[in-house]
Length: 559
Ligand SMILES: [Zn+2]
Image (cartoon, helix red, strand yellow):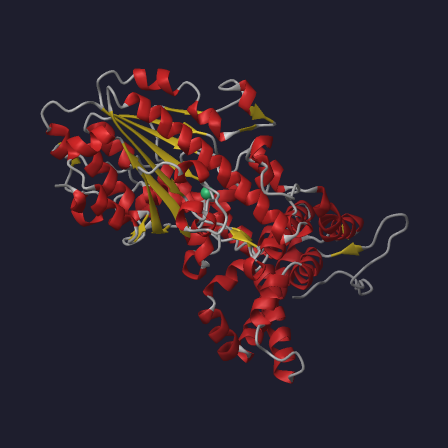
């Protein structure tokens, strides 16, 4: 481009003016920060890419260099168009802080920051978020955020007339994209094969993973907010067991567990008795081969209350449709959702529900969290509201929500010791982590036993039942993994195998003609979240064309 003004001396990359820091162009700043991201914030990605390769082979170094250039170019290509003299520093500051946090969690817990994980993070309430933070993180976060932030605000963005800057910046952008493409091309076969075999690796690329997931979630949520939930089971009506003459009204409690894994569940044969109270009740049935729909609450909850489940999984369809509870309600069953966690994820939208707070049960709530026994407080009053109608009460537990397992139970349940008392699990031994986790299961066992005792008492006037089903499992350090949320396709069994318990009152068993020996046998066979929708419809006598008899665990055991 021709410039007719007298020639100014060529400006060096950094120009020092007196008193203030050096100047740099917008693109230089963006590029420098992109390089910082790729070099410092992507440990898990690099480890995954280099797994099984020799660090000494020249090919490995070539691959690292080429993928590094590609990642820098990729981030630059998206960030640079949004940056100008005014926005560059605020924009990069936000990204640096996001990358520091994302990098920390990916590194520490091998969290894959895909849209479902991000949805989980965004919907987390303050109490949960507070627990995820441990003071021990501060040094690493400070190093990863404070250092580049200081540098960024020390340097001043260069002022250029836009007529000069625009073509120049366009040129730089094209050059970087070209370089990135060339670098990718040079290792395409090798890198693409690795990425294809480990598709989930892309969710380790920080902070691109966060930016992409935020965009996806916002896009989906906006699309969803503009149209109402699709009505399902419009033909729902009472049928089957609901029409039996002389039956009692039904009262069913469905406890949605949190982060309880089958591997540590006493009833499922865990070496430690983590479910002593349930084990002492001979009429409790343990389903021992149950798999979850997802590995986090945001996926599992809507999925287990949908007619399609994992076998016909379609996230947009499930999120955009009504749930089991709406179908029950339509048929005349009273439904109520009581929450001790981060909400019902749309499952109870528009239906009676309440979220526990310190006001619900002051003695059981502290620091923004309630112990799960608070879910049982005032149940009697709640159920009286249903009168002679059939009723389903859903209790959504806080359960084994990590990493602060030790805060999930009162002191009396700290039976396996020593326990891990920090959220920074890496500071604890495996034994301490497992102890705290198992204590939380002991407490769930107690809560379930209390709920059953209450239902047993009510069985003189009602046909009562309890179903307990956990939403997903948890990793407790196996293979270096902690917490949950590994993409379903590659998730370890500890994250997808969950406990499930069924208790039926003697009256219900008799009225519905259920063969308990048959059901006990069924409990040992393969089951999944997909069975919940159809089993509850069958148990409560609600018929609709959505109902699939083979998915109803009770159906084959009715005489
Ligand atoms: Zn969960």
